[in-house]
Image (cartoon, rainbow over all chains, first blue to last red; front, side, top):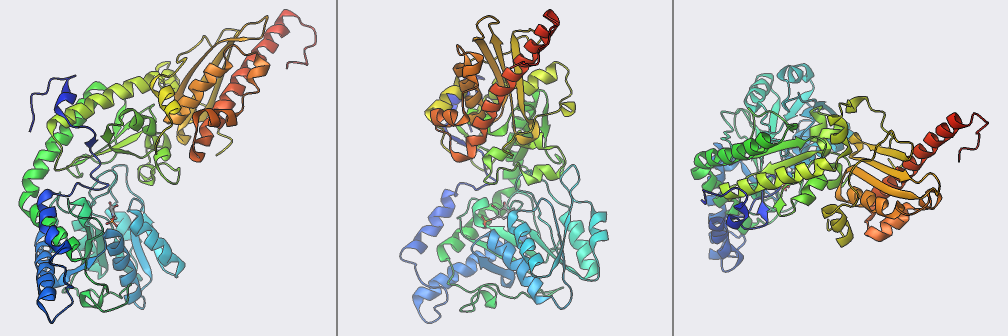
Length: 420
Length: 142
Ligand SMILES: Cc1ncc(COP(=O)(O)O)c(C=O)c1O
């Protein structure tokens, strides 16, 4: 790692652009790519071909990957179902449980800052007659367990609450949620995409019945994921959502993506060996970034709990500066913003809105997602560019000027835009 | 999204950033947008009282790059124009000049609003000033 970076000169030590958007996706680890390669070529067999060498080779690779994934999360191999990624895993878990247990009840509980793969799946089930409770989150981004307790009734069949949020990195109290579900005989699904490989996750200790995983957030390939489905105490049953040849114990038909699965397995194996060290290193980099920014700028606010948070996440609002204009100023750095201008819907981040911070701070937010390949020199460069750009944009900001004049911005009568 | 060269240029080198004395009778101030919507523009003009020509213009904008560019361009365009000529600037002209994509059209609308608000403020002030100077009827402020 390149240390001893001379401030103001840091760009000499870094290669641009810098990637710091690791919640969106991660750079495939070269060790992982190497292991996948043969399965694009000479080891091309169909894992379902039971009667020849090509099939056996593929099947063996798939089973080894299954073992590696199971090991990372404390599951057994028969509990791992391969999918095309976490969107599919979330859909299969929620719709599959809803359909299987609909005689028992029609109530599902989730929370406001889930990924759209969960929220929109729940919305669809509402159209089919299911009742869904969307729990609010507290200021720190975590749900209140008492809210969950109050929301549960005799018709509740499923609670689906993510392990770690993809925007603010906040960790939900899944172990407590799982214990509560266990006690009440309700199934517990968690979208563990962002936590896997960063913070220890164990389906037994964390009382999880179903868990979604994806390859591309853990330095593995895109388009491949898995769903953990518990086999005992309780034995979870699902109605398949994709019908066909009956692959994956009938829960997910379709010829297996062997190279992807091999890559996912390798990514899990690497995570298993390196997570403890790596998370310590990344947390130190993240804190270095946070301290540099907060030491040089006033009125910056961290979104979500710092205590219950992924080691690689920093989500900050820079008051009086709009997020997209900030991204534009640091265009040699890949990060993302909760600003409306950067979203397809032209709405500011629903996650930040759910924290109750106010839309203006949502518009001003930047998400830094650090990862395996970031260096100290990169962090120093990013901090410097962010600080300079925020200062420049504040000089351009009428809000900053007004705030400095002592005007309370919340009391101003704003002329709303005619186009809104 | 890729930005046009002109947007990038105005973003990197915004013209006429700053503030004019908002209490001066010659200065009109327009403040449009809202922080919750993600853009706020403040545009100010200084008008020569005898010629009605806009001699100076300044802006500050909280908003995306296109909003900054739209308001920067607006200050360039109003300068040297009479108040009435400046009212003829249309958001579509800004869209064309900056090659704004459809999702950014509201930035140009806001810039047009800012020009109108600044002129409106100046007119109101000058109606008031005239009002004080000559207590004669002054219904016709525009
Ligand atoms: C929390 C969370 N869930 C689900 C997904 C969707 O994963 P995939 O891209 O594998 O479908 C993502 C990533 O976009 C995510 O961050």
